[in-house]
Image: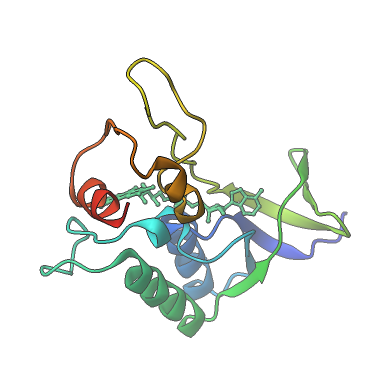
Length: 162
Ligand SMILES: Cc1cc2nc3c(=O)[nH]c(=O)nc-3n(C[C@H](O)[C@H](O)[C@H](O)COP(=O)(O)OP(=O)(O)OC[C@H]3O[C@@H](n4cnc5c(N)ncnc54)[C@H](O)[C@@H]3O)c2cc1C
């Protein structure tokens, strides 16, 4: 019988991983949530969220992420900052491999989400690899004609920012 470090390990502390983690922590499971960056996932880079239930006035992505993190911690969810490098999966054991260690879990939830496409057209018909979501690259686009492939408040605020 293999020795498990955790009943459940969740990869990714975006809204999906944090929600799963809260349920598991409330159920008193021996659970670990692993996040390579900061809790909140993609919503951290979202200026304003208008479609999340419970916030009729809207809320900034950063504030929503912080509230989710505080709520998860209050429910006793254990979180660790690390990047999962690879997985060894068998029906009985889920092994997560990090740069300097590995851990074994009885079950695994992969909530590693997505990365927004890095697309910005600086000239019609050409595609740049840099993302307009990343502030450090924005000076590259100053005094250039930009085509915006999305809509909504995020687009408007990025446009103002640039
Ligand atoms: C600019 C922008 C604006 C948006 N605006 C809205 C909006 O207004 N309303 C709305 O409903 N949705 C919006 N979205 C979409 C919303 O943010 C996503 O649908 C949501 O975050 C998905 O949640 P998730 O938990 O599935 O994944 P993610 O939020 O992608 O979280 C996944 C997490 O997993 C972590 N991770 C990945 N791989 C590993 C690994 N190997 N080891 C450890 N950790 C790992 C990542 O670092 C990340 O934190 C927006 C997205 C963006 C980018």
